[in-house]
Image 1 (cartoon, rainbow, N blue to C red):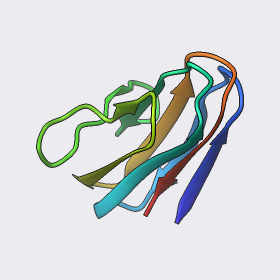
Image 2 (cartoon, helix red, strand yellow):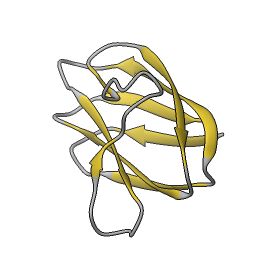
Image 3 (cartoon, rainbow, N blue to C red):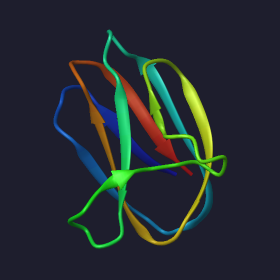
Image 4 (cartoon, helix red, strand yellow):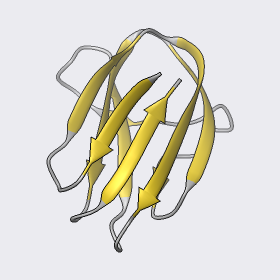
Length: 88
């Protein structure tokens, strides 16, 4: 599992091996919204969508099924928080 810990508005980026997986977001949100984006070139990011074409974004505990090729995944909080983003 890749685990991102967000505590402020500084984005965190991980390398994802690609394939089918799960994105889970949980923790103490403190009013913050968490956005998750994907990049295939390491420069240009776009919203990550799940297999139902729903945007992966949350302000409470959520989980999505994803299917995406090898990429970078970036998670960002809109404010101070104590949230984890797990990609497995």
